[in-house]
Structure formats: C-alpha cells, structure tokens
Image (cartoon, rainbow, N blue to C red; front, side, top):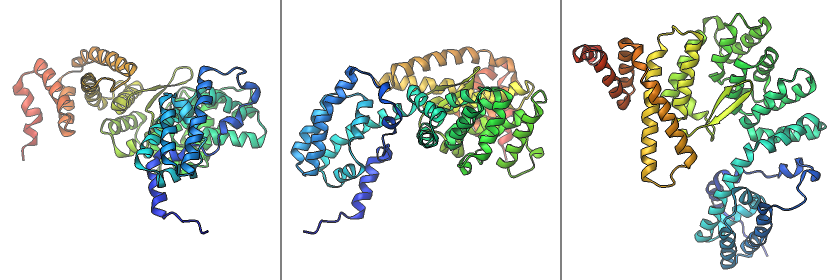
Length: 442
C-alpha cells in the first residue's frame, strides 16, 4: 500500500497557522540542564495538574493519529476544562512533535483545530514566561560557568533563547574581577545572543567599571552574530559618551573608539557629540522610526543602571515615548545647556500624558482589556507626568514656540493644543500666530 503524500501547500499552511508556537523548543533543554537532585521530591499542585492533564492530551494525540476526530475533540475539551496554567500548557505542547502538530492542522476538522489553537495560545504565553524566568536563567548560567565544554556550549545555546533576559545576570558575572574564567565564559554567552542585548549592554557601558566596559566593547566587536550587533547604531550614543568623557580610563575610551569605528563607516572624529546622538535617537523613538520599531522585542523593557543592570517592562503604548524621554534626559545630563533637546522633551512629555489618558479611557470602556497592574502603573505615571508638565512653562516661550512647530510638523494635534494653551498664558495670541502659522505662507 502506497502512503499518500500531503501537498506542500498544506504543510506550509499548517506552519503559518501555528505561528510562533511552531518555533517552540524542539529539544527540552530544561530537562537536560537541571540535575535530578534539584527536582522537588513531592509534587506541587501545579505538577499534579500537569500529571493529570497528560492522560487526555496523549489520548488527543493518539485519536488524531487514528483520525478519530470525535474522540480527539472530546479529549481536547477535557484538557481545556482543566484550566491549566500557561506553563503546564507549554509542557503539554512539548509532548507533541512538530510532525504531529502539522498533521493536525493539515487534516483535522476546523472545529478541532480551533480547540487546539486555544491550548497553543496558552502554551505560547507559558513559553514567553519560561524564556525570561530568572531562576531558570540562573541555573543555565551555572552550567555555563561550571560545566565542561559540551555542557557549556549546550547552556550557551539555551541562553540565546533568553536573549536580553539573561543580560543582567551575565553582566553581573563580568563584574567579578577575581574570576577571569567565569568572565570569559559569560562574555562568550553574550556574544552568542542576538541584538536584543544591545540596549542592556549600552546601559552597562555607562555605569559599569572600566574592565566591564572594555569587555562589552570586545563583545560587540567579536560577536559571531556581528552582522546583527555591529550595525546596530543604538549603542553609538553610549560609546560616544565614553569617548568624550576624559575622566574615564584612557584604555576604555580607546576600546570604545575602536568599537565605534566598526559600527559607523565614517571617521569617528566627524560624528556628532554624544548629546546630539541621544537627541537624534530620542527623535526616532518619538516618531516611531521604522528602524527602531523593527528592532523592538516582544517585551518592551526600559533598561537602567542602578549599581547593576535592571529592566522595567512597560506597555507597548508608552514604550517609545518613555525611551524618547529617557534619551532626552541623557542628552541634558551630558550638557544641561543643550537647548535643541528641550522642545523635543516638551513634546514627548505631553504626548506621554495624552497617550496614557487615552489608553486609560479606552480600558474603562472594555473590562479586563488591560491587567490591573498595568492600569495602576499608567495612572501613577500620568499623575507624575502632570506634576512635571506643570513645571515646563518655566522653560519659556522660545522653547514652547519650537515645541508647537514640532508638534504641528509631526501632526501631533493634542500636543500642539497643549502648547497653545501654555503660550496663551505666556504671551498674547498676536505673538503666537506669526511665530507658527505665518511662516508657513508661500
């Protein structure tokens, strides 16, 4: 009997339907990296739920293989009724091979596919949480630091999945001057990571010790994925800040200069000052430049240095504006008299305030649209912005005129209206019109 061959388009369609779930781990590195002695002796409620769910899920896979769609549907409904956590759904999904998943989407009825998609969606949530779990990352880093060469390479491969979430703990290893071997292995792991580590490394450049700064410059230059990391100009303002700060160790400044020359194919001496580079980056975030949006990861994290590398996850709706504010402030930290950045900072702060208000108003109309924690965070931030905005008129009419023109050029109407309201308080409407609209006349 000759087996039927499925058309190629069916397989492709199944891959497209599965989306990111199809890219889930093919090998469960978690089981390979955790010693048996580390596993709890008694099953928790979460583990018991997973054990109980395995029976109907395996029945689902067997019924799908036999093309008994009614029984498969009943088994999947039983799994869904258990209301499993995202983590348990992720573990269940790993019990199915890619071939089995493709076959389900190629052959099963649409109603059964919809049931399976519900579980896969939950599994993808679990996978995202699994990727960034700090305890899991700490165990993998331990394997990087203490394992033999094959174990180290396997662990580094796993850390590449974690990407930016592994950066804080790896940078902490770099800070240990007493253990050169550990620092070398941590650097190897960072070199293997993708471009998601660029922003956390940029923050570490600004706050860490000289030897860590030099290590990071070397990581950026020697990464096996340098085609991803080196052209990433988001690190340029931090490098330029080091180069132009004469209080920093000369060897460190030379390393930063060498790294800059590999990123930008122009003489480094002709590049703008660090404060201007931060201003330009702030403008890109404010206007959501395509080069910035394309490089953004799924989770939007604001990185900072507070004696160590720390990250704060923020909603996508305010991420770009918060990054714009952060870079405006960095420019002013370098040069408090850098006038050019002040109108942009005015626009960014008003845009944040209005965006937070719009999101909160929309979430009030749609219950459970946003997590309570996110709503509380937006309310607190909007209150803080209101207090900051009340101090902005002290910047004077000149900066508000420039901010108004910027808002009009960018079609940020709510920001423009806010600028007009302040200018009414600072000057007459007769002064206002010639400064903006009049110069637009042909």
